[in-house]
Length: 434
Ligand SMILES: CSC[C@H]1O[C@@H](n2cnc3c(O)ncnc32)[C@H](O)[C@@H]1O
Ligand SMILES: [Zn+2]
Image (cartoon, rainbow, N blue to C red; front, side):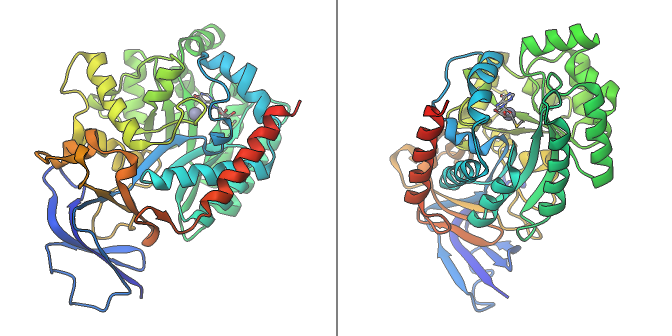
């Protein structure tokens, strides 16, 4: 039995706005949270393998980035200031067509490094060469939901289905249970109905959920309405997609019926505020979706449309954007924003039974945030400081599945210099290759 004790931290359990323990103790046994309590309640009972003294820090669940394309770190700053369809077809897809499995591995390694250093412990991914992303997840110690992106209109569409099945058979439940798999049909505009039928057959056969981009732009909505006579959400619903656990990314342009369908039938919605702002896609009606009972998590999307993977920044912008969109300062208050970035993101990916809370019986995905910096002073309200004032460099220590992955800002599982060297070299080659 391996025992790790965190003591001295203020614990923001995320079990409720008032479920905060001052100078508390968290006992972790073989990766499980087995005790969360007052000072002295766990120490002394057992011999510890490790003790983290966390005075002056807040312990909270690690962030869950429920929509990204990790290996797009290779495209950071490559194509900016364009609308989605032009960005994808003229810049992103031609660049991605040149990427190898090794490129994707190193891109994912950089993404994991950036995520760990900014307090993200779990991410939801959709891309190609997912075995290479899985390798990066396994080696870095992160937790991830992985989906093989599938473009139904591509000549490789059937190959993508086979690759998705292979990913699921090889990696679902692997890396000590840290990796889970969903199917990733890219979007209604790249996956025609007959292809989505094949995806649903595979989802039924393998008992998997479905991760898909939905209603991201007005162009998408107009095109799908023209082709199928329905909005993207109603089109997917009529095909039977929501019989499966669906994680719908973006959901920016919705009518009232779409919102009802998503609230009642989707497993979760990934809100990507900064990507939607940068591509000028629009503002997702998140406040309304939540009022209707939808589960909404937060995603950064890839670093070509953001351009970072910083969840603290994302949750702050996501909250402020809803306030201005609704002209209501009470929209997405600080605690709700933190919930969306932790437990709600986990629920969106079917992981809410194991991560997203500091609670006995959960796996230990925990971060320690330093409160001793000028921008965190004074502390009238711990929740407000964490949601609105903290930045990624305040994240000092990261524990995933009970293992210390970053200690006092040193990432223990990754050679940072090597990763950045590889990504610089590969990005330069890809940029210059014809
Ligand atoms: C087929 S793998 C996933 C595919 O999605 C692309 N992508 C990245 N960001 C977005 C976005 O905001 N909307 C739609 N598609 C996006 C990525 O470049 C990959 O090609
Ligand atoms: Zn995306």
